[in-house]
Amino acid sequence: KDGRWTFLNDAACQFFGRPREELLGAQSTEYVHPEDVASTTQAIQETRARKELVRGFVHRFLTAMGTRVVEWNAYPLFDQEGQYAGTQITGRDTTERKQAEEALQESESKHRTLLENLPQKIFSKDKNCVYMSCNENYAQDLNIKPDEIIGKTDYDFYPKELAEKYRADDKRIMQSGKTEDMEEAYVQDGKEVFVHTVKTPIRDGDGNVVGILGVFWDITARKQAEQALTSSEERLKIVFEFAPDAYYLNDLQGNFVD
Image 1: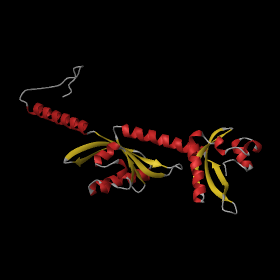
Image 2: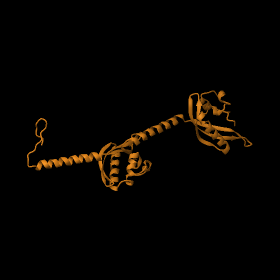
Image 3: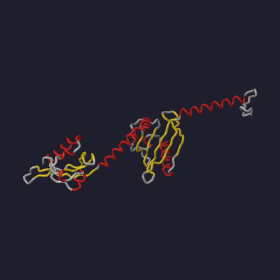
């Protein structure tokens, strides 16, 4: 009841990497990471006060192999007079799982940072063409926050005809399993907008297609420049065709080209 160990099984001794004789009678908090002592002591006190099991508490232990993360359950023990006699604790080493979770969180954070800083609009959908995520640039186009897109479909943001086209494109790409690269045009706020779109299937660990990833960017300025150039060339050609004088074009070798 004063926090000293009175029993440890073989697994506990092996976990700490120390002989049972050294551990018996030792203050348990001596082996708790200094930053976790306060919260651990509080958890034990709550167990005693509430007279019930505390489940899934996590803290760090100091062992012969270094710091290890443990998830444990604590159950208060009382004598025949109802007086607190101690605490029975069972736990499991979750160090590797914790490290994997932290690595995954770090990876996801880096991935999210990358997506948010790219100039392109990026989104992902599941195999039913339901949005799973998008970056800030795409969300701004839709006048929403990125997390508000989850669970929505193109029908929630685009005219029916356009939504059906996007849905058909997505299903075709997921069915074929091949990446597609395309240029598209649509009307936004009364203006024609051109975009370059790349869509590719998302696969699970077994290689099965489970969704689609889309990346697109605005190429309106480029398309307008191309159209202006084409229009200028057509006007110039008309001038040449109907001019009363003779005009011709030569290349650098003196050959007629027009």
